[in-house]
Amino acid sequence: MEKVVFVNRCAKVVKGGRRFSFSALIVVGDQKGQVGYGFGKANEVADAIRKGTEIARRSMIKICLNAHTIPHDVQGNFGGGHVILKPASPGTGVIAGGGVRAVVEAVGIRDVLSKSLGSSNMSNVVKATLNGLRQLRSRAQIMASRGVARPAAAQA
Image 1 (tube, rainbow, N blue to C red):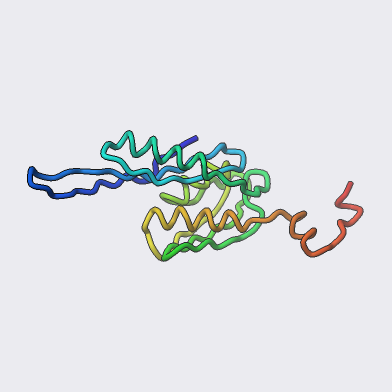
Image 2 (image 1 turned 90 degrees about the vertical axis):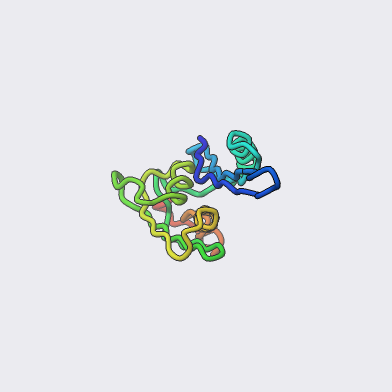
């Protein structure tokens, strides 16, 4: 699954008029816990999207999920962008806007609450969301890192 989050047009003024170039922010995910983003730049929109998609596919990372939500609250930061993500009960849906929604849907999360604070720059919001999702750990991973043996009831 790929989503175009943002397309920007840039103009360079030359002797004959204006030359336009485009940049596209793309989020790619398999909806099973993997996601990546890419920023492609070219003189045509289609080429910028194609380049961004290729870059996003190369930069995919694995995210720890708990059924169709996230295991715990997390805050992601990148530059001026701050994103808070909270798990939600089944049936809540994706309560998120813009860049956060694109990333969360691409990962395959169906129930989550989020709030974007600070910068509204799409690039920073997407990177902050990915920073937050990278911090997620399952209960088993946290217990293993603390050296706690799993209780007998949990093993059954």
